[in-house]
Image: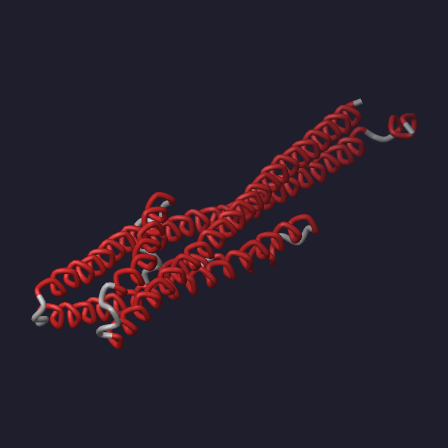
Length: 306
C-alpha cells in the first residue's frame, strides 16, 4: 500500500491528503456541534429536574405554613397549588428522559407524590373534623354553663339557708370543674403536647367523676336539669375525645407525608446525579472523538507529504 501511495504523483497525493484532512475536519466539526447540542439538551434536562427541586422546596414551605395555621383554608389552597406544580414538569421529563432507569425514577417520583397527595387529603379531613369537634365543644360548654346557671338561680331562691349553702357549694364546684376543664381543653387544642394532654385528661376525670357525688347533695331535686347537665358534660367529653383521635390521625398523616417527601427528595437527587454523570460521559466521548480525528488528520497529512 505504501509503495502504491509512494508511486502517486505529488499533486495527487496532496489532493488526496488534503481532501481526507478536510473530511476529517468536517467530521470533527460535526462531532463538536453534536457534543454542544448534547450538552445543551442535558443542561435543559438538568434545569427541568432543578425545577422539581424548587417545587419540593415550595411544597415544604407551604406544608409548614399550613401546619402553623392549624389547617387554615387559605393555606390549604396554597399547599394544594404547590402539589399541583409538580405535574407539568414531570410530564415534560417523561418525554425527554426515555432511558429505562430515568423512567423508573420518574415513576418513583409520581408514586411518592400520589402517596403524599392521599395523605394530604386525609390530613385536610382530619383538620376539618377537629374544627367540627371544637365547634361542638364550644356549643356544649355554653349549654352546660347555661344549665348550671339555671340551677344556681333556683338554689339562690331556696328558703332553707342551710340547704342553700350546701347546694350552692356543690353547684359552684360543678361550675368550677367545668371552667377548669374548658381551660385545659383550650390549652390542649392550642398546643397539643404530652403535658397539655395530661392536664386535660386529669381534669376530664375530675369533672366527670365528681359530678355524680355533687349531684347527690341535691337529694333528687332538679332532676331534669341535672340529667341534661350530665348529658352535656358527657357529650363535651366525647367531643374532646373525637378531637384527640383526629390529632393522633394527623400525626400519622404527617409522618407519612414526611416519608413521601424524603422519597421524592431522594429521587430528585438521583436524577440530578444521573444527569451529571451523562454530561461528563458525553463530554468525554466528544473529546475522545475529536482527539482521534485530529491524530488521524495529522497522520494523513504527514503521509501526503512523503
